Image (cartoon, rainbow, N blue to C red; front, side, top):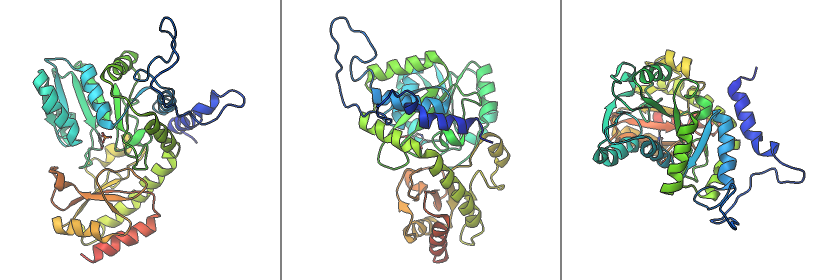
Length: 369
Ligand SMILES: *Cc1c(COP(=O)(O)O)cnc(C)c1O
């Protein structure tokens, strides 16, 4: 039986066509304009290009159906993160960030919020459930964390954070709205880098924030309107197009990742495999409870840096690139960015290639190590 989230995705797909009048195009319009006709006293939906755009609205409405929330789109995941920071924080506030989450989320806070008298504290994702949340204005969750794939209990942390008077933000990039619904679990805001699986074609940077709190959504819209952190209509249109196939792509990617994770774990050259869907993951029980899919990212630890680079170089169908969530499988050695992972740790982003072809490719390269 189709569950609630399947229904939400179907609604997102059909959103634009349901409003169409006879003979109107069933695809969303790509509106490239900075100006709208605005005579006399300013009034009406569209007045200036920095304030609103019909292509943004089309994507926001589709994502809103999927998130079951209000959505505000941004030109990148980091623009979405920054909007949350600057729209919600004031001097004297304390923010709790994951120590092992996306690096730039932390760097932005430390370099630019610190000097504005916001206190930035960090805690490892796996220890967030036991962290001291007293006095926090914002509690940031990234689960599974990128790149270590540790988990935090969203419902548990949200309940404790709310009791302490904090706002809870979940960065849901690694799972997309189809893999996990943090708002259903109690988060106040979701941030997503749509650069990854939501667009899925590695040709656009994009982001969105979702919330069921109208006042928060209005504040984020004001921030976007005034700061000018606005997406281009063409990029927006491409994400709308990418979103249409998110469900088939993500299902395929997650199913292949599950197969590969199990086989990689059994290969003699592999020291460790981190994947929330494997019973060996330290939070597998939590993964089964809170995640609808286990994701398309696998952490693979090999003997050392040399073995990791040789695996990536030795594959025909694995792109050497940062980022993840695209239709092409990609991999990188994360220690090259200074992440707190072993030198031989490879983050494998599983794409849409046929699973057996990918496995033969990986196995051949591993056997040669
Ligand atoms: C990529 C990423 C971001 C930043 O997104 P951009 O679109 O690159 O600005 C934020 N959070 C996570 C978890 C990411 O993977």
